[in-house]
Length: 94
Image (tube, rainbow, N blue to C red; front, top):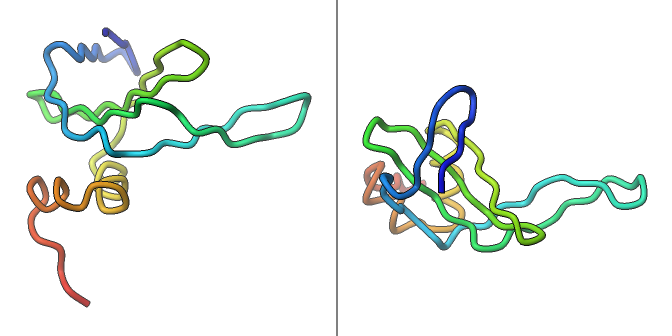
């Protein structure tokens, strides 16, 4: 799949799949009421240039969202700690 976000091209065929154990909640509206929805088939990708992409499905459509490294760290700490440790180093103990 190819996404163009902020004038950058993200091609998941050329990116490395980092995790498919994540969750993503997005905002929407139902009958004028703000709601939060859970995306399906959430995947986290990294390009060879270090750009990050999160993809998810909703209503038979796949969406992409560009992420900064801090957002990726927060997602991986919450949903895939093992992958976080592999990419960003060991977690400090409190």
